[in-house]
Amino acid sequence: MHHKTLKVFLCATLLLSACAEVAPPAPYGACPTRQQVAWQRMEMNMFCHFGPNTFTDLEWGDGTEAASVFNPSDLDCRQWVAVAQQAGMRGIILTAKHHDGFCLWPSQQSTHTVAQSPWHNGHGDVLQELRKACDEAGLPMGVYISPWDRNHPTYGTPQYNTVFANTLQEVHQAYGPLFEQWLDGANGEGPNGKRQDYDWNLFHRTVFGINPHVIFFSDVGPGCRWVGNESGAAGETCWSTLNTDGFAPGAGAPPLDTLNQGNVHGSYWVPAETDVSIRPGWFYHDGEHPKSVKELLQIYYNSTGRNSLLLLNVPPDRRGRIPAEDSLRLVEFHTALNSIFSIDLTQKASFTASNIRGGKHSRRYSPAHLTDTAYHTYWAVDDSVLTPTLTMTFPEAVTFNRVMLQEYIPLGQRIAAFHVEYQDSDGQWRRLATATTIGYKRILLTPTVTTRAVRIHIDQSFACPVLNRVGLFLDTVL
Ligand code: FUL
Image 1: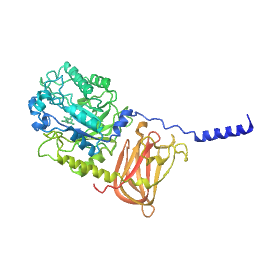
Image 2: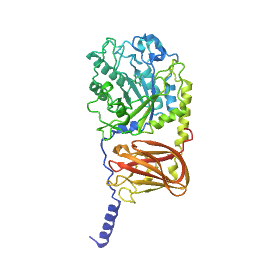
Image 3: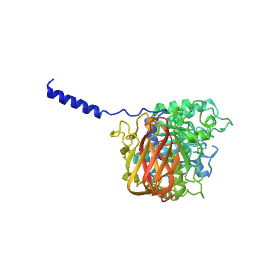
Image 4: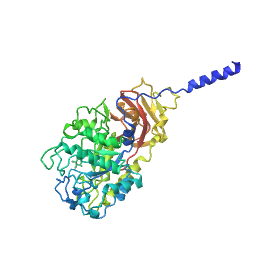
């Protein structure tokens, strides 16, 4: 080789090896599928309970109500979708069939459906209307289809499992793609006084066969799990992992506090979904009113802010529309969220990390990624580092009372404990908050402080921490 060429070659090799990047951290434990990551990133969806109960003023119809009670005077699914979008909801889930068995579409599997009702002379189809409205607006649609059926004559016999699988098939074929299939575990008696022995495997196979990407909600997933209460609160410790072997939805489910907190090192990724109603009931009832903006904010912090997805129920009334009172409240709620989260004080911060994966000049894993908007970039540390610290300093003092952290969950949930400190005006570090899990998103409510330096200590993790977002905000609403 010519002398000069050799020199150029050596330089190029050196340069290349200097740039060679350290491999990303290996995933830890049970990890989400792509669909579960996409689902978690929806953060907040709208639930709609609508059906005969809306007209009979009940929460649980017993299946003997006449189909003629279902007769909305002015149904408008576009309005539901518009309300959801104005409130910042990323998807909508409708009770296509509740425990009374009444189907909001003309099902071939039942004689208790919209086809037997006077609405549009029996030619109405709520699922079709919602499908159209969702497509027009680009809003993902999901369905709740209750396995418990207090009307169907076969309920309580093996035949019903086929009927129910056919029902699922009908809905997913005609109205898909549906992003989420909600299957609650309620299992009471049917018309013959018997309970059903549900064939969950058959139900899963049927729907996955049509839509392999669907997220199944149930007490034990497999897509996402019930949070264990209907008051709108995930556990302060909330693992997205859960041990589900040997458990089933309903009576066979893990204890409520396990659903609420998940299992550390749990064998499957089954994140918590927090379903709660904006009103006291799931269905619309005259005389009930929506929760206040403060209550909704608290619910948001307790769900989305605790590594859970918020599924907020907003029931349409007898017209088939969401009442003005609720839609106004949702707009106020959304305005409040925007006022809090549109100004992230970390945008002005300089970061110092106790470690950066691949060395302090590594750009790929630098803390600068904590404030960018790209989801798939993150701050990571070397594999051997389990308890790093991250310091933010500000050119001018900042005032905040909300600390937000996000782990990069495609690599699993790795952090088990952390705390946050700030520097007071005498330069003393003072502890502001102590917490356990982070997961997809954790928002800590702290006293309001004004400071020029904030430090996050990761106190325990099972594999090197990987964070893709940190935020500091001031909430003047709650
Ligand atoms: C439960 C049902 O029994 C309630 O009526 C409501 O639909 C709730 C969301 O799920 O299983």
